[in-house]
Image (tube, rainbow, N blue to C red; front, top):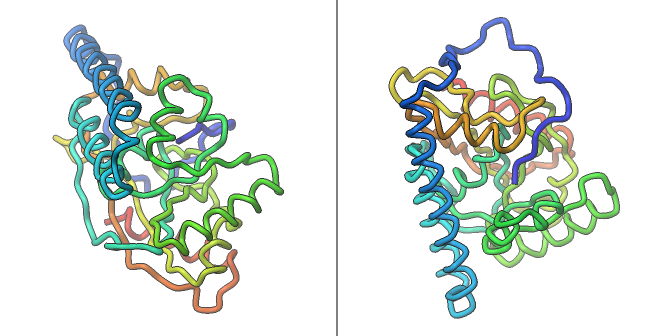
Length: 272
């Protein structure tokens, strides 16, 4: 699950992309946001009902299909359309590496292609969200603990050996959507250990009408989760764009160089 940056967002690059203006919501947009919010809560309740009542009887493949369908439904309920570009790896083992903008990123990536996320451990204790993360078979990590990172790398490697599609956000926290934070390389060790390819994934949110970059879903700085959600619910229609690059082996690169190369490729995908 996404978590915000504890610092101010990085400075915008000099050649910044066109950004949709953020304006206070009108009365109509507030009403629309409230309606979307009710639909969101109802969809979460339906997901929890399915998880507790039906998941124990489903196969692993059926659970993955249910998670993807639920994620697609959530985006639709809150007025977000999904566009996929490129081809996600059809099967594992593969590690997906993506940029990180919002609490919405995990839902967006699940809607585009089911994957098993690595997420911060305290997400598991969040009301409602923790149960949904468990339903998606999330791997949890104590980010401040180097020893726990080694444990998670071990479990990621096991998951990859079993043929899973695993996903990480190597920035470690959310950025402002205009430029990325440096990629941490530690979790790439799991792919190196089992010789699994890594597929770069670029996430972008755009205003559906103007095609300008939308900052509404961002979750950074002084934002609270509720503020970010409300801003998203009251915004004009948004399109979530997920672009997949080509899966690539490490080719003998050390993990820091590989992380830098992957970040450059995601930057290239986002520029399209």
